[in-house]
Length: 114
Length: 113
Image 1 (cartoon, helix red, strand yellow):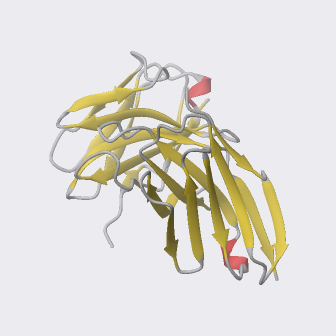
Image 2: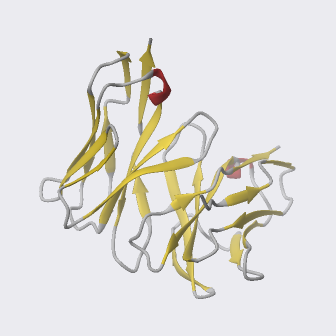
Image 3: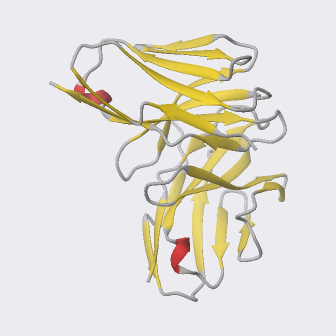
């Protein structure tokens, strides 16, 4: 069964560094998402992406964050100048056709900022 | 702003019991509702998706219902097994062209043999 994959599974970085989290959505899906979950907190929406542009972003998704689909398979989340409070599990998700369909989540990347 | 609440926060039951997990949401203008399972340190596995026009969905031992007007959904698990132990998350979707999901904190379920 097709699945969303994410790399790396765990990333440790120092405060102030830039990180890129990578995702490979399910191949025929058209909508892509990033969510995050701080330890012990709810899963929070960051951004949705369709047709090579952001379709919606949350109040969390400020200029520190950016997303890109550099080729036909990868979808990336870049976090610039990381802060301690960026430590969280970051999930990528994708859905087919149009938003409103079932979202399929990847296994997540655990980001630890020291 | 949409707020999603799940009750109870934790539940511990013996194997074989039928159980109900509850989810409520403040804004009834939803497009769909999705139930997920999350194992410790793992990703989210989709269990059931209910569109706003539907009343319930079933998959195996799982049955999810939706009462959009009252802002409630329930996940019914029949004949629970130790392998069902996980955190169950409820998430609501706002609109057909906006895929953002709003999540509850989840119900942590433990099924003991």
